[in-house]
Image (cartoon, rainbow, N blue to C red; front, side, top):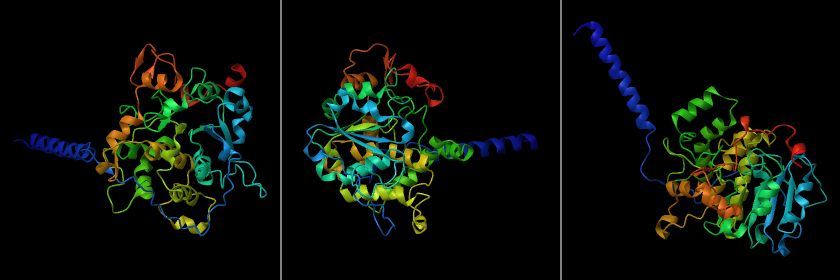
Length: 376
């Protein structure tokens, strides 16, 4: 064999070996039950936030709660006071960047951290004993947003037409989106969070919060749920499939599946990672990433892990979460989803993750600056 031919054979063998190793490391594994059954994060903080997030009148309300996380930049919250919403829901509106009111224990958050997650968790923690029997809807503070699953991106219409009881009937939890755009439901558009592809993308695109949060998710799951009881860190070839964008409805019983102390631990995971936290807390290497975009987006992939009722056999349910089953429920068929949530049945042009004419993902994930003015 000539030297050149021998070198070519060796190079091909090395390339084939490297390719095999990459494919092997990132291969899909057999069905895995993850130990995501208890939040085990331990804070290093010496003090916990006071209970200043009480929603007035909630304990006497028979309506589902509408828990809204907003900031001043979302604009006026008057859209929430229209009769179609006010008559349907008990409003609990948190303004995350409002100045603290030392004389009040109502609707305040301990920090503007984790995007909507801080308000959501504060509501659950401070109103844990008085959650509505009718359930709770969690949403954002802007009426118009690119991710609202409506042809005009109008949250007023979505929340007004949402059939809360039907949404909760199958699994006690439902994301408010039916279209799969921008989420991780489509494998061809969202590689596994722990894959080499995701890690490399996060390294090469440090400005990309989606890539960074996807790459950080496996370690975050291990930090939140991990111990010796079973696997908690997402495997290389495994993926958490979920709808975008942290707006959902959940039953009281599904929230109560977790102890109040676990929600406190989850909130502390966020607070301990904050740049403005006690410097001693930064020694906790398991705390949330300091980048607020990344920390908030990680939790947007965790809500359904907490709240979806998988209805597994008793011997499996106690062992952990079946990721394959979780992914199936987190990404329902768009046609059945629109019918169940919004009464839009028998739609035409439906594929598994979309129905023609119901939602279009806007360019660059943003609406035109004058959208609210042109859509009163």
